[in-house]
Image 1 (cartoon, rainbow, N blue to C red):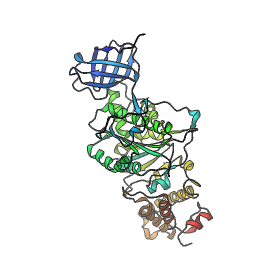
Image 2: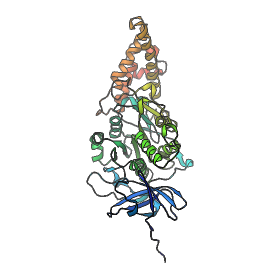
Image 3: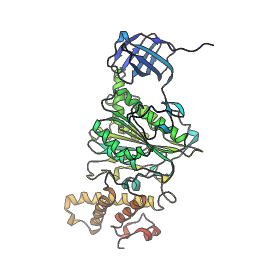
Image 4: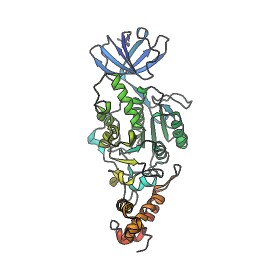
Length: 457
């Protein structure tokens, strides 16, 4: 019986940034895992990015620094990159390739699974349902996360989007069902990484969270692997161990910049703003790994976080993300209080499937719609006041301005370490709408008004 033995190739023809070109290869496939041995005996690892006849282009996960073409040997394993999956990931802090940073042992799991994951059969997909409570009032009230949903956080530069993402990861829960969080951080400074670790320390020590940290000075290729490893870990927790999993991916703009850098190294023809033409399909291959499977209790909810260069929402990364995801939470400079969420520019398209009787509150959708309508009217009144002065406004317009201020102080403003219950969020929401006359609350039914309205009719 013949035993397959890997072939070692010495025909490295070229170095291109984080890539090496190997000649004379046979039977090598895309995404195949490779081992690279340097002259010193050091071992590095890579993935096959492209194959053309007997030429293979390999991306080196640790970078190509110190490699000499004539002294480098490459071995292909014959299969894609696999990781061990299971509960061993919970409570661990790792780098972007899944190597421990917390001083603990290597992670061993129940199964070995490919990092590329498995496409979910559309015929067994269940629509998103049931809420994920974040403890952030403005999100829970107006843009509720739903299990199995993909919804993005868009942020203008300089706003604390990482703190918000970490706060959501630290506080989120499903009301008692088995729940875990996988947080994949990409391109972070050491200071930002320390902040994220501090915020998530409690959940990590409770073995409820997996933290993958790819730092700004780590190899750029590692950044392309980080979200895929995070989702592979989450898929096993959700669909094998039947848990509900929230996957936070921050910052996907850093991921896309890494993709652009690798694309340039490959000599590909650039598309919009020098990003590769396949940016949409690449992002979709990540975001679409969320969802629920019929007959299984688990779910994956994906929360990508994107910083918008120059605050431009038409930039390719947020623009394409908006096409793929089912809503967005927008952080804007005009909102001067943390968490800086602009409620009129934020939307959860799946919210209707996750709220209401038996899930949150019967009046949830109507209350959210009433607040949104009131804030829209208040914005119009504010623009009019800038022209003619607030004293020239009608009494009802001034009530709407008071409602907007109540929204800011009672519902929006929240400390980064403050977790609010759903009951407290609804209590504050009713305080906001109760600043308006009862006759203005046309979106709320009489039964809800009888139970919740606190103002004067």
